[in-house]
Length: 212
Image (cartoon, helix red, strand yellow):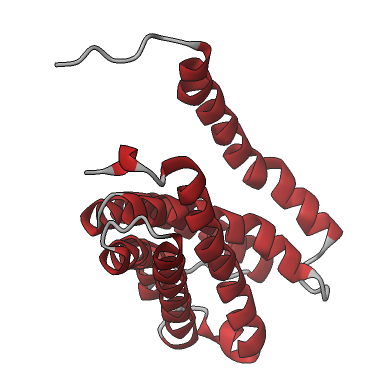
């Protein structure tokens, strides 16, 4: 077995510093940035969608970006497995947060852990985006193929989420009240993700390093 590369500042940067910064940023969004945006753009304002995009939308991009990246660069099985792990964690966190949010703001407590749209949006959606991207790209190094596979997977999952939110969600009335707004806020982060991840893939893992 070959000896791994010697420990260096670059190893420390990518192995400790950057993961720690990402972890801090993830915590800052719900703890600091989310409440600040809610104060600046209340739920009844015309710019409330900005709060949704920069909190929930960004969290979804992180949750789905990892399985999408692994699906493109490794295999459909790696993407699907990572999606299951990421989606399950986000499902648990999101359902718990929204139970508290709905109780405080709307005076109703729903068991969102039993909401099929939450299960479909996060667990099934994260599995699908990683698996579809990996299956369509099929380990190709072509940027165009990665971009096509990524956008197809992201848009498919975005539409899948919208349909669930419109039909079986416990809060389907919110989507049905303004379906165009709901579709916009669902698809926009997914389109950005579908474009961004292949670029990151090309810059960081586009070569022979990612042979499985």
